[in-house]
Length: 282
Picture (tube, rainbow, N blue to C red):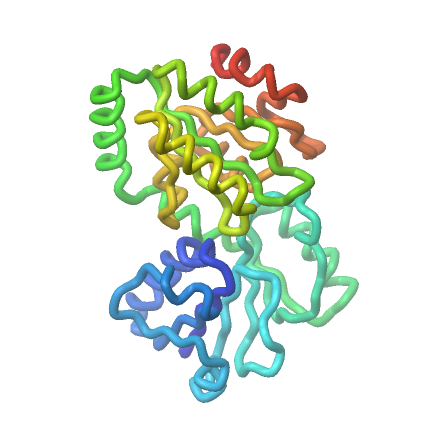
């Protein structure tokens, strides 16, 4: 089988890393397609990769796997949507764009929704497979926890906080928690790892990078592997980001600011100034 791993954003790399490993085990032929903006971010050495749509046409694929929402309809092969998150409340998650022949769903909730669309449109299939990104939860855990223990000891800190907000302008907490994140940093008893979405506004990137430069216990994480940050974190601070659901699978506490979900199963605050108090209660 010939497979294209179709990437339009950097978050796709970690979603499709486990799939690449399986393709290797099966001795299937595959290639990555990336957009030019991702050329400097491509994390894999000695892997087949192209930025050329013509090369993908010439490759004559049997299947094209896409974490994103669009894929050129004229490319050869079954178009497969594998999704890029677990947030069903996000705008557009259940929009049928008529690009895909097959939806590989993350779990029963998503499967039931897409099966309803299948009955309506009758031009695609739905199979519940789970989500490939979650495979990484089982990798390198012992090493990561050992490194966490050493870091906490070196900084005389007690816990690791992961701050991972969404980029969506109407939903992000990045503008509202500047002072509050710095207040937590000043206390010194927390290591704060900051991980932003690839599409986060530059003004917030600049502010929080500067924060990391000023406090030895604050780290601005630019690597693509957010799962490693999940493993070492004791607490997630966020808003309406889909990373909440990925983190909750580890049975760890979450604090959000103004989350819009109809089914909140974590601590959601409405006032930014309540953040420190909420953290203390964890």
